[in-house]
Length: 95
Image (tube, rainbow, N blue to C red; front, side, top):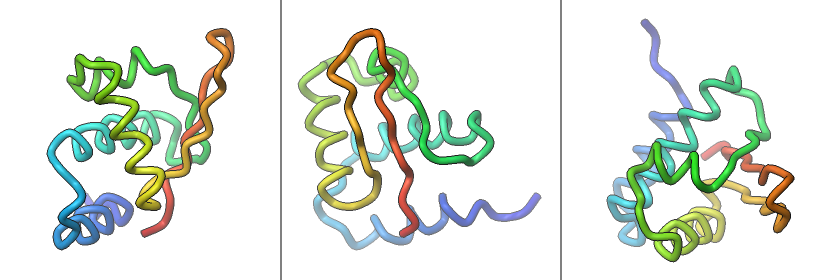
């Protein structure tokens, strides 16, 4: 099986990024799983509860901090819906 370039690029980028911790990595991997299930197409539609469950994040504040950080650090582009009936969207950015 070949290398998944997006994943390799992420790990290379975070290697020297002191801002990224284990919860960021867990969240990114959960988002990557949804991206995988979406056949590697952007954007990925997400629901907070589902992502938190896959990422093993139990605190809503932790989730929001980490997803905001990943967005601010340009690992993802997060477009929240602010509407419980509409999924938020995440773009996994080329690193």
